[in-house]
Length: 103
Image (cartoon, rainbow, N blue to C red):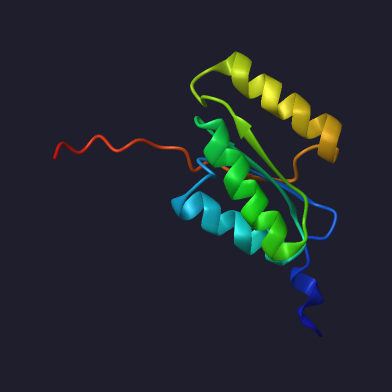
C-alpha cells in the first residue's frame, strides 16, 4: 500500500486564521497532499499573500479571503465563494483566535 491513501486530490480545505502560524502550516500540509485551500483572515493582503505562497509551493489552487469569523454574514459570503469556486468544502479547520495575554 502506497502513500496515495493519504491523497486529498479533489478535496477542498477551509482554514480560518489561515494567513500565518498554524493555519498557514495546515494549509501547506494539506495542499502538499493534493487539497485545494481556502484561507480566511481578517487581513485581505495577508490572506492573499499566504494563498499565493501555498499555491506556488504546491501547485494547488489556494484562495485568500478576508472575513471576520464572528460575523455570520461575512462567513456566509466566504462559504458561498468556496461553493462556487471550489465546489464546496470537504475539510474545515477552525483555527482563528486572538491573543488576549497582556504584555
